Length: 122
Image 1: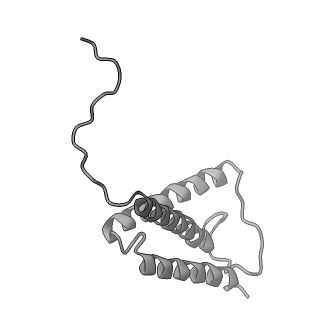
Image 2: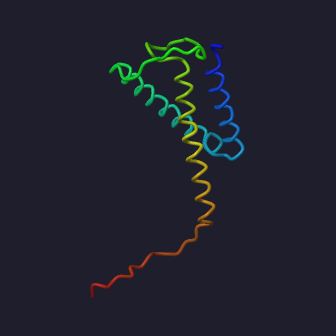
Image 3: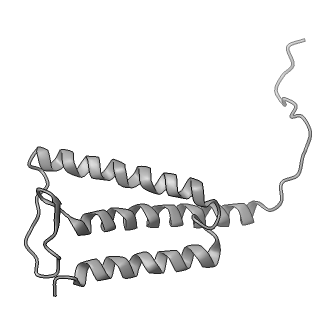
């Protein structure tokens, strides 16, 4: 029973990878940049969690569905995978919305320099 939550997180991450691969949204668009963005996002939220734990805002609850492995006091192993999923879902959503907006705009055409339409200062 102790691997249920971790298994669900890994399954959800796997689904995000399939979506990413199918629609070229994040890692398959630019893998090095995606790896950096994902690592920075996870690191930010781990620091956030540790600050919350240090201030007694966050704590680990008991659940039979978790492995019980702690990386730090009140920081379970599953939290890292949850944070990875959170960041990955966010970037997939960003990539998908960017693609939709790009398709709606259509191909960009050069219109030359813009001219002001206001009153000239002559």
